[in-house]
Image (tube, rainbow, N blue to C red; front, side):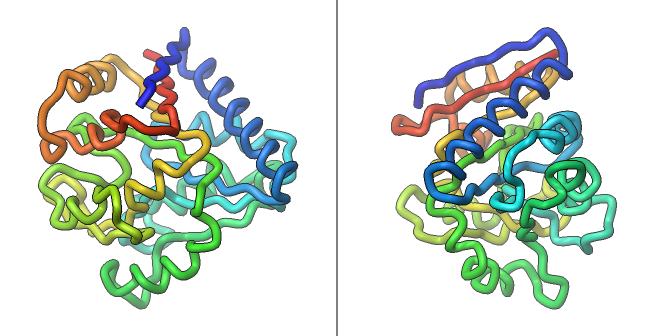
Length: 233
């Protein structure tokens, strides 16, 4: 994979640039096909990016927003990525976007894989944009070290859209898009901030087993799409 590293003087500048880039790709997709699909990650890092993107003047009613992964918690939980999106992205101009959640309260995560996969199938082949994050343990999406279902989630020829994941570092059970789905994105971005994340990135790029730092499964790809890395201190 061709790694393209974009460094910004501060986090506000990064958020602005990433939002502009994502909005441009979504606009092009809408013009070409009449719709677009955006997959985004949770956590604290993307909040400012979400807020910038929420003001983008695009045809949000033609955009479907998905989560790259979700914690298996109620939608009003402080740990819910869906709640994060409602509070920081699905507002302002982006309030008109269609949001497809990755949590079904009546089912366990493994039980929900097939149901959710059927819902997402029309939206993810391919994605227009996928924005990933990365933890200091080297996880991305819900590809965690020592995850019980990691091999299946990363399998390059796996046709599955979603994988249910449990791992020591994950806290709750998780639901995640699989690696092939993420690699299908026309724009694939890794959004990281802080010196600690840059050191984690250096360690991941230095080589070693994917199982120890699963973000290597994304970084080590030799085929398109190119990975755009966005970083600010």
